[in-house]
Image 1 (tube, rainbow, N blue to C red):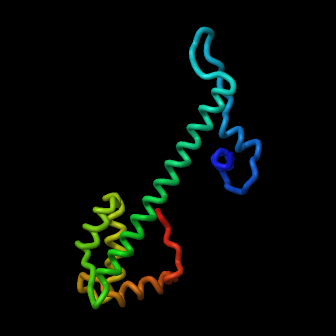
Image 2 (cartoon, rainbow, N blue to C red):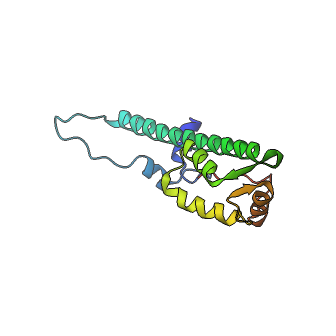
Length: 146
């Protein structure tokens, strides 16, 4: 019941409005005479089932994205440990491995170049920490998953 309620509660405020219920179960035209298709309670059950499947799919996708970010964080920390660095090519390869779309790579390259304050083509711990501080990010910051 709780999962069903949450699937319909689009704004997540813990209350269902008539609009949320209407959006979850829009009025369907009845099948033409002799037509096939779910009726009454079966139609509601099918719609709720589909809505729950979609919500679960999105939740799992979000979890996978978060795990990918955690994997990137762990990789970056290991690369930067003991005066290590991350080159643009290494970062590109890791992000590609994690499934970051090619369409985002230009933006990430610009971010890399902005963080590379000494212009040597590699990021060190100090440059990463400086960029994080500049953006107001510290170790308690919850990273976005998008």
